[in-house]
Amino acid sequence: MDVLLDDTNALGMVRLEHGRLFEFMKSALESGQPEFTNQVTRALLRELDIHAALEQEFVYPFMKANLTEKDFKLAIRQDARLAALKLKLQSLDVMDEEYYPTLYELIEQFQLHRFAEDLYGLTHLEYHTPYVDNQLAFLAEAMERRRAEMLKRSTDVTSNRLASQQARVEHRQALQEEPRTLEQPRTIEEPTTIEETRIIRESRGS
Image (spheres, rainbow, N blue to C red):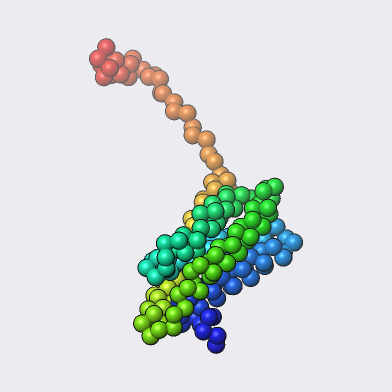
């Protein structure tokens, strides 16, 4: 395997992830069915969140420690705009007028992120010294474990949300189907004898 795309090396792992996410993005655009596009895009946004979290936790600290300040800033300069577009797309419905233009812009911005990170960051870290290679291998293992944890947590949250939504639907259906009975008005029995009248008046203190 090409060392640049070796997933046992953190640099290769990031590059492979960039390529996989880009293919994911293309599949979201190639469908002519809005519902399918919406489902793919939601999964894509989740994957982008995980990718960003892994870079923030593992890749960027390593880059910052081994790059000049200028190169590090250039490598991550596209991230703020990319994050803003993710949030915007999450807030849109697939039938909204801005949905597809925002998705297109997100893909373009991701490509800029990918290019800048590789050009100013990853390329400058390819020292191939035993020390650096060991560090990058350790980072790759840590990233893989963290990714598995985040995917599991995301799946659990989604399952819980779906279960909660299903429970609410079933509850509403049960309320609609349950026959309603009108409460009978209470009746006050009037006394029928003089003795009963006296007892009631005494109990009321009259």
